[in-house]
Image 1: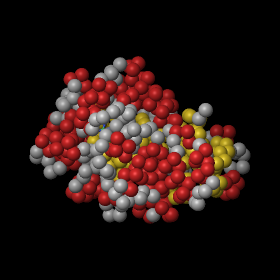
Image 2: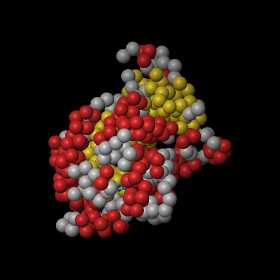
Image 3: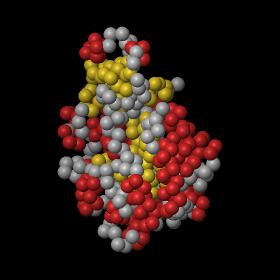
Image 4: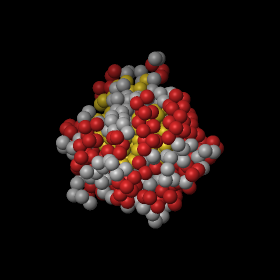
Length: 437
Ligand code: GUN
Ligand code: ZN
């Protein structure tokens, strides 16, 4: 690699050297008030205090971002790109919301032009919000996956995604069968999994929309392609949980339905997980599977309060990612998402520390996708998906900054007050992919 291809970004830098839920906030974070990240060939090759790093790369002239925080791009651990168009839909809770808003919207994604446009819009909106990677639910149509991966490849983004498998309890036009869902998913895996930065996630929507035969097909598919991920929904609303009990009377609980079909292991990413029993929490931890916390969705659809302390703190130790869950979620902004996670904690007497919130939004979500050796941190050897956050993006924030006590106060206040206007630019694999105009 020639020196000409090296580039460096200079500003305040934030990276993780540990898990704040395990070692505590102070020992988990490395913050440099004047730091530099050096990138070559799309990968971070050096990071640290400017005084030290500059001497090691004398020919590189850094791009300077004063009053900005340079950190890894956000990772959205659970999102439905086809639902971008129904964000902020009034009046319903989960099952009615699916029937009245979600399924009609998803019915149009067999059309290539429609899906291409939606995928392009979605990925641009991710970049505007500093999101460089997401784990994406497409629709039942293979075209919806092809459009998403093509558009992601065009932007050089690392994306996980999969075709929704769904063979009952939805409109006919959105149903596949156990066999066709297996065959279509297998064809998509062959075409896309591991191509450039694409990762395939086997995606049975949730237990109520899959027959036992289809859940068995999903398990068989995962056994055949063990390097893929698996994503689905778990224990989101009381009505849904009661329905699952009726549909699968033999199961010990909701998680057991997935366990019985080989869908509970490392690489499984369960959205929501709000109303879990102690047994389910223990089984999640032992399996190495992850939960995705979808705070704005859980409040917007009225599903309930995620119990972060019970699943993540201390001995609980379940891997947790943070997620927008668009379009049940009400915002593309990860600042809004962290704020909502904080507020949900407060309603239960639990104050989510900013070190934990930013960890969940980056390396924690990367871990949920088994990508925490590649993305989610400013660290040597990591892919250079980096966002530059303007710490004075609005007059109120600027004023509040002038009273900030320390870096924790800065990080916390940004997660409560900032929005997409704070995202100054985003680098994808070291190339500038977005700049705020
Ligand atoms: N459960 C099954 N499908 C969905 C979905 O699209 N959104 C949410 N929030 N929950 C679901
Ligand atoms: Zn979801």
